Image (cartoon, rainbow, N blue to C red; front, top):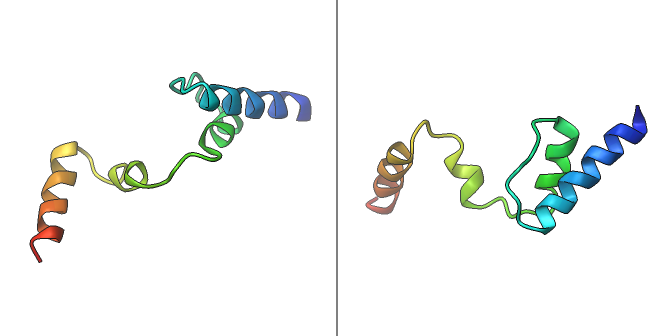
Length: 64
């Protein structure tokens, strides 16, 4: 079981390194894929239901 988890983690790391889009929904894979990626705008945008909602929030924050 541990080898499978490590394998999925390593696969996520390899895919990240080659700039592939995520290829699995497995949590261990995602940990590997997210490791080392920047957590800037992607981390903020994911809290909004649409890009339009994010842009509306952003314009309000800028205009203050």
